Length: 266
Image 1 (tube, rainbow, N blue to C red):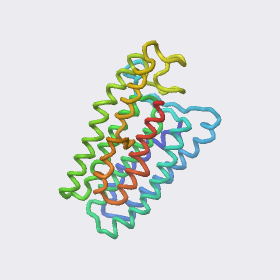
Image 2: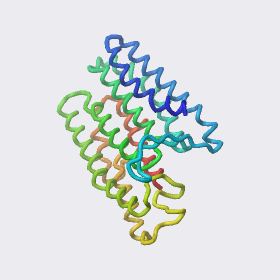
Image 3: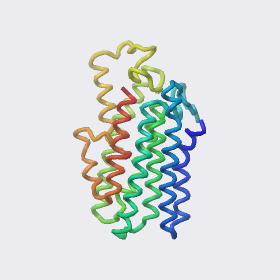
Image 4: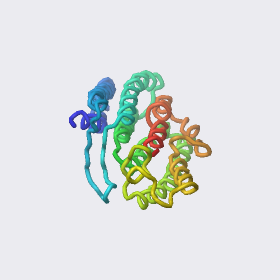
C-alpha cells in the first residue's frame, strides 16, 4: 500500500514543488529527476507481490455499485507504470539539454505540466475500473495541452485546438456511450479477465454477434489516443510542440495510454 501511494502521490507533489524552484534551474530539474527515480523504485518494489498474485487495491469513493474511483495494481498496469516512470527520467535528462540549448521560455511551467502528465499516466496505469481510467484519460488531454501549445505561436495554438478537438471529440462521442451501454448490461465498470463486458464469465444475453462488434467499435473509436485511423491526425497536429513533448506524447504517455486502455477493456 505504501509503495502504491508513493507511486501515485509523488508525481503530484512534484507538480507543487517545481514552481518553488523557478529561480533555481538545477533544483527544479533535480526535483524532476529525483521524483522519476523514486516513482520507478516504488513501482519496482511492487513487482514481487504482484507477480506472486497479490493485487494491491485502493478505493477512494464509490458513486454507484461497480463504478467509483479505485486503483488496483495488476501486471499490465504495473509494467506500464514502470516504463512510464523510467522514460520520465530519460526524457527529463534530454529536456534539460534541449530546453537550455534552445533557451525555451516558461521552463518551470513545462516541467510542472510534464510531471502532472506523468502523475496522471501512472494513476491511469493503476486504474481499477473503466470510470477511473476514463476520468484520468480525459485529464491527461487537459494536462498535455499546455505542453502542446508551449511555443505560444499561432501554429502552436492551431495544433492544440486540433489536438483537443480530436481527443475530446472521440471520447465524448463514442466512449461515454460505450461506458453507459456497458454498465447497463454488466452492472459494473470493473475490469475483468476476458473483457469488461462479461458477467459471471459469460456474455450477457442480447450481446452477441453484431451488437458486441458495435460495442467494441465504440470503445476503439472512443480511444483517440491510440491513434487509430481516421482519428490519428492529432499526432501530426501535436508535433508543433518541443521535441521532449513529442517524446512524452508518443513514447511515454498519451499514445501508450490509449493502447493500454484498449487492452484493459478487452
